[in-house]
Length: 122
Picture 1 (spheres, helix red, strand yellow):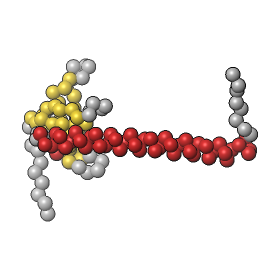
Picture 2 (cartoon, one colour):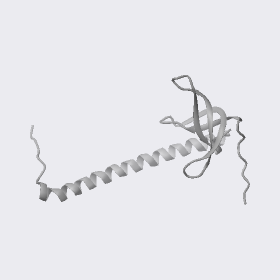
Picture 3 (tube, one colour):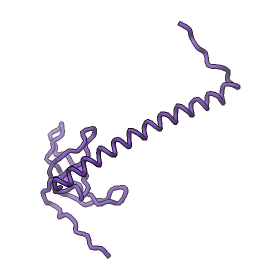
Picture 4 (cartoon, helix red, strand yellow):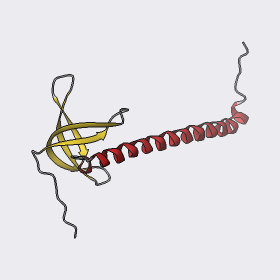
């Protein structure tokens, strides 16, 4: 059985995380809880040094591997985010193509019953 070392609650740490449309974001904060993400990867819930519009400290969930990151980890994390973004864009393109293809098939199946689509000439 593997023994895990958990971060200590109340500890101030630096972290990196994925921003919303911002790529990699660096920050710092205090660990308040240890949690699991939906894939059962270890995370911490922390109160960051960020302040929201109401003047309150922002709480974030950050993966444990992203705490006190080395420069090498930051480079790998940034590269991973770029790869994930490229894969997401590629997948979204394929979804769009598939939806358009199936919309044509649906139209072909409906046309004998509903009639042709009305077109308007300018």
